[in-house]
Image (cartoon, rainbow, N blue to C red; front, side, top):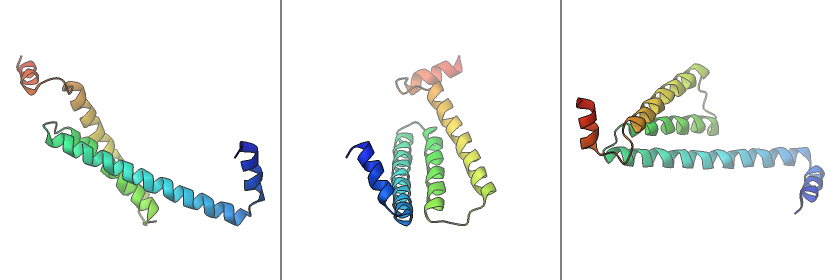
Length: 119
């Protein structure tokens, strides 16, 4: 369907139908986002368990994103300052994780990183 035909088709739908379609699409995008964020958190935990503990910070960050999106999806009455505090903690955790990645690149062995720190 061309863009013009799509435009004509959507213009012919009642406003109530268009709003319903919009709500469904937003919900679908939110569910996809929650699934992707949860996947990143699980992978970060698995990577952290393999000897890179700073990646727990990345996992925490994405868990915070999942909580935020779940709160929106389920329409939980969560206050703004609570979510802002959660995002602040998530940002600090992400900063620690990225700093750990910077200091210990994946190709760098733990023995050589220990030797670098003791010099």
